[in-house]
Each structure stands twice: as C-alpha cells, then as structure tokens.
Image (cartoon, rainbow, N blue to C red; front, side, top):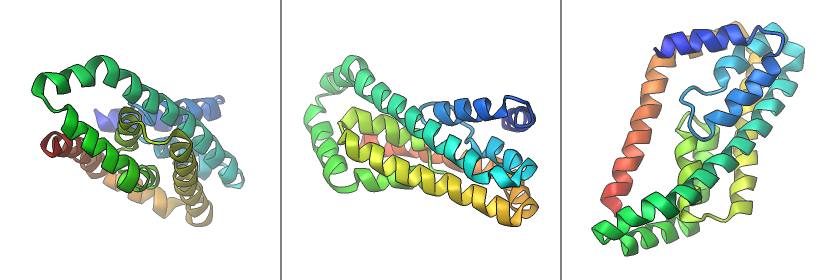
Length: 194
C-alpha cells in the first residue's frame, strides 16, 4: 500500500499542477497524512534542478501552515476528547505535569527534531496544541526546522541528484515503518508517563 501511494505521488510530481499538489501534500503531512512531501519534492527537483529553492520554499510554507492545523487539532481535540478521558482515569494532574515539562524543557526540541528528521512531525504538532506550547515559538521553530529540512534535501538533490533519489526509494518502507513505530511509541510513552 505504501509503495502504491508513493508511486501515485511520484506520478503526481510530473503533472502540470505539481507545485499545487506539493503544497497540498506538505500541508496535510504536518497534521495527519503518512507520506512525507519529499516523495514529490525529489522528482520535482530532479526534473527541474534550477527551481530547487522554489520547491523547498513551497514545502516549507505549506508544511508550517499544516502545522498550525495540527496544533489546532491538538488544542480542540483535547477539550472534547482528551480531557474527559484523563478525568475518567484520574490523570489530570499527571498530564498537567507532563505538559509543563514539555512546554518548558523539551517541547521546542521535540518540534525541531520532528521538523528536521523523518520523525512523525504530526505527532509533535498535535501534542504541542494539546499542551498549549507557546504558539509563536512553535511557529518559529517549525519554520526553522522545516526550512532546514526541505532546503537541505532540495539542495542535495540539486547538487548530487540520482543517488539521493535511489536512497529514498530503497529505504522508503523501512523509513515509513520506523516513523510509524515512533508515532505509536510516542503515544505509548505518553500513556506510561501519565
């Protein structure tokens, strides 16, 4: 299924409206979509290396806007779903303590790590909204992290081309399952930290 989705996105990268599709994929990946926009970014840069910076900029802007949606999902879902569940189990205090630690000590680092790496960025955008991480700092670190990631990927493709594409295609499955394991592991860790 992942390979079919990858192939569909790769074909979409050659369409005349590929830049709009790239923006759409970048937007939804930051809040719920499982496939990173790199799957479209790679062939688009490969097809037109001189526009590497333009494609990276599209990914960055759309991804940060999508992160705002992820943040909103976390903030809104907590009110009607998360809070009643925590209350039922008597874990409101534990969550408050975890949120305070996340917001004061490691939340920005977690958002940055998710923004730059193949860690599930959506997990950090949603959790940041749930805990009420400072929104301005969240946006700033998201711009920095997502910009670093997409501009670096696009620049490396501009410079080195095909070997980078081969690496991503070769390791797509393991990278996806690693990301999925980290996503599930994050939820399990949160459960046991509470």
